[in-house]
Length: 216
Image (tube, rainbow, N blue to C red):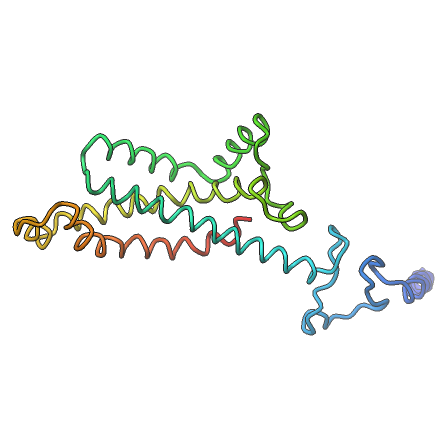
């Protein structure tokens, strides 16, 4: 029995000796284990191409996705947080705080599904996935929802941190002194309060930066 199994194994290995594993990638007939060390990442059985040929466009799309997520999330979150902190306790503050809490407490996979159902399935305005961006190119149709979904999630968190920092700075002694000296409200905010209030939010933004990379 053992001799028969050895003969079958030898016959099968001999039949594969001259046949590449993946003919559509022009791979070598024999298995080479040092390919990764030499820069050869092998063949993708899904896309039927070399992994290195698929890796470049995917990394480029991921980089652009991270850029647009931060470009939308950061300015909008800072404006919401600063305005909310300037008007602490007002109706505007309560509305913006409710929106920030709602976006932060909703996971990305929930908001992503809801936005996909509304804008991709029902209305048909947008594409629910950015996978086609590596093949057909990046466009407003296939890149909007993948950008907006993580941006909405991070926007509320940054806005809440900005609001808390802005409230703390506005109650500081040097802000009160500046107001007593006759400086206007917006002058105090722009010249004194804003620069100190943005320290904590930018720390949070840097912590959110790695989370944007696998968003695509």
